[in-house]
Length: 280
Image (cartoon, rainbow, N blue to C red; front, side):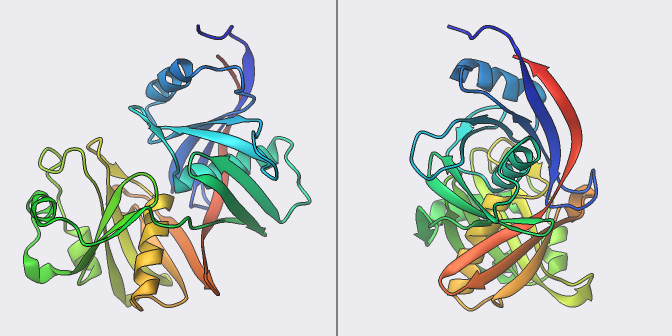
């Protein structure tokens, strides 16, 4: 049964950017406890953004709020830019402003989020799947991205919920020159990353993300969290670094990664672009 329509607070925010229109947009609907799954899915399909989130009261102790995350096609157990964007909206619309740490509940569990000035960072969740990619799937990816074996340094699963696989390439140019055949990699979530050998506005890595739905995601928190777990555990990245993403799409996303003991934090800026109410 579809819930009775009412007005709810709403924001559309830009994540991983300090300037509007440079990061990854997210729609956030507050006070969504009485919305059913079908209505949430329909609204997410209507916004046609990579993700739309719905904030609800938590159902477990210690959590500040609960979030449900939808793409236009499905619900996700976790995603990075929706985590930061949802926290930003929750704080700006009455959340506990004095807190330096917020606890978000989602389908993968409780996610810790830190506030440091204008930056929000989430604690990267454990990988649900790591290690080698099956040879048949890897060949499908290589063919779909038109990559030759000598361009690829390493490969691995980096799945923390959405199902990401990752390829480490030799150079930033190799990453930016990829022209994916989305039909060939249909149903797969693939990230590519490479170190920046030249000094490009204090950026250490260039990242791109190709979704299972057939488009390139501008800036992707979950992928970068998985990449950080992989790169840092294999000594392929320093303990603190900045990744750029969205360059190929005309965006300027910046993801800040830092390791503190065994914890890896993934963060960036969030900017409110649209604020008002939505009738759902």
